[in-house]
Length: 206
Ligand code: ATP
Image (cartoon, rainbow, N blue to C red; front, side, top):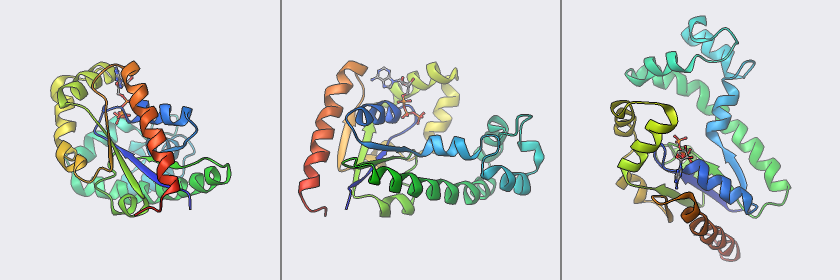
């Protein structure tokens, strides 16, 4: 059986950067954030269901989910968030399994599921054999996301406060990648992780 690795971390921690490096070493990468964008792009499978549940107002002129509008609604309204997740999560999970089966056939040594809210979800925690957490101090997350998304400090802090705490994520981790230095410093750490993951191939997974 091919090892299934979960990769998570808070917003701006560096999940994408780490998964890109692992992909470069030959790992099979499945990015659930990308899948979530695909299913809500024009013609995406979630679009008719979102239109039905929330109304056509939430779809932009191109036929894609109007993300800023939806974000504004679901951020402060748990029942709206749950309604959206009841639509998107099964579609994301189904597409993940489809991609996983394809990648497994292609001969990659292990699969990495990149999932922002992995810890919070029974589906992912049950699926994976091994959990990798990308970690850095919150202040660094705040600086990166302010810069990348052109957001104010308080906007980023609001998102951080709504996510699982750093400690709750680190507790179940089987491996932690520290991403508080430069991207050049990240490379050797990720190579070491890749080698460690190849090694667990040789041992039975607990
Ligand atoms: P999100 O959950 O928000 O999608 P993420 O965990 O995937 O974020 P990345 O997109 O990899 O995080 O990184 C966030 C931003 O910080 C990106 O603009 C990325 O280029 C930058 N970044 C990541 N790691 C480093 C680093 N070690 N040094 C400098 N910049 C970094």
